Length: 311
Image (cartoon, rainbow, N blue to C red; front, side, top):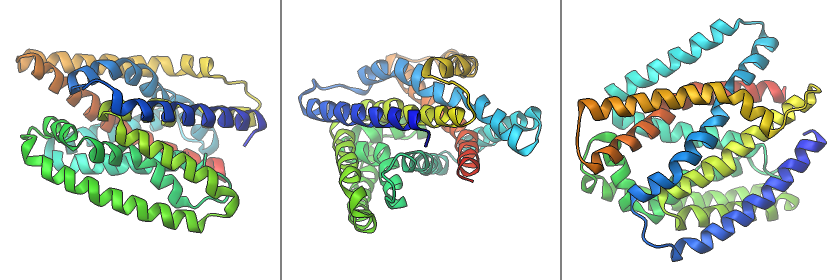
């Protein structure tokens, strides 16, 4: 990694660990936060900062287009086609779509997190890190996660509570076993930092309310690391990209996605009017299914781009 990018990554790692420690320590002392208050707390950070890392996809398209000689129109057409297929699958099989979205998110998070693990760390470490945003809330707040899943699937949360609770415990057990295996497979020089990062992040993900936990990981861990990778790539080609420059590049696509999401949210309220909880359920539905639709082309393209960067 470019020297400047490496220093940025080191600085981000220290800030991430300190922030996760502080949030994890605050978690048990926070006043009871229902999903409505959590939603309004995280909406702006997720919409503006979390979404903006996907808004920078045109930069990745430019890099891939230059490397592989394909047209921008071809890339954009493929991007939109994958989004349309994701929408169709959600409408057809919402339960399988939710499972697929969770798995795809873990895979995407893991591919980015692995790039920031210590040299020689087991690839399993990336998967352990990328899965925490899913496993942590299921373990710490299974009732609220069941409510969220119920809204997404149009099912009664009570019917999902046992499934979420059991799945959270099983996944946490598998995660701990994976941590032991990953620790043993990694060289001694990588073990300490890997163990600190994974244990601190795991504590924060379990102790924080689910939407706060997801927002912290999505905005402060995943999105920042994505931007750091873009800046490292730009520096390797003698371009000077900083966070502000990346934000400007990402702004048009980010604002377009936000506007589309807002229109869908308002449309749902117009066609299916209801009370305050209906507003909240529809808002959560738009945010999470919207992220799912965008994640399909985004994650596949980023994986292609990362493979090309390594080569």
